Length: 274
Image 1 (cartoon, rainbow, N blue to C red):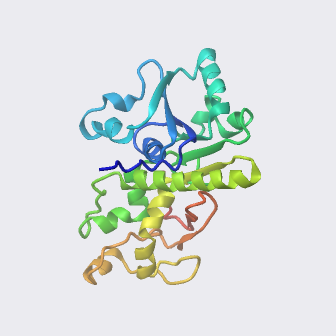
Image 2: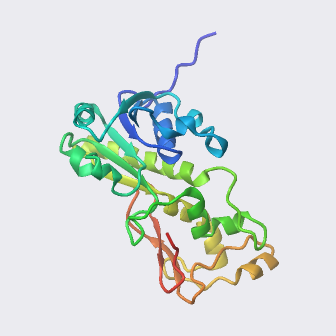
Image 3: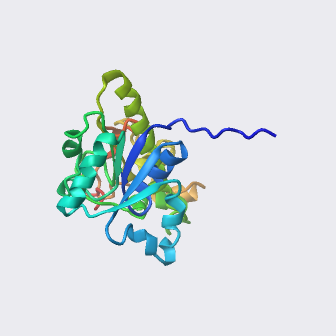
């Protein structure tokens, strides 16, 4: 019986992954499963801190870091910077999911690395896309509550986080789609670019269908939703009113990840807190 050849559509693509926890490693994993050569750059000397996590995070490293090569580098010293400067010209994609400004402080922001390789596609995985919250960090469960997803998941009056890191994983996949689009565009222009995906916008995408059904104003058209208790009384999953103080909540088109064009703009006193 002949062996089925492995599908490796991204063979020949090299990815340098600067990541931790779930979102970044998931993006790297998807690239690796598609055949890319993924080199995970871990902090020296102990490596990714999720290697030693217990409890809830015990499975993080094993689940999201297979099929990768690994390199421990101290980015805060000259020798470590020299290693990265040798690697970047050989890379097609950089991906990172550190807090806003971290990569820039380490000398590894888009502008800094693009100066070494103009064909570089730089995938930044963040909490929020461009807007008033872009400089804030976020977590999977935080944006589930901010967008109302937790109110749809839990029983009436008891918002509940989804049982898995669904927003981290979905945001990572959106990011890989955006990066692949940028790689395709590079074939035409010869130049790389920075693309991004974010937790909040991924969660907003998930609740969009229910938001439309409940009458939340999409792109300025529609009506205010009924109170959450009324939604449950009508037999549906309650969606949190994003502006309880009387402002108008919107989920409207925005700029950001090529695969995801939804951002939330909040008017009034009831906006999300970071």
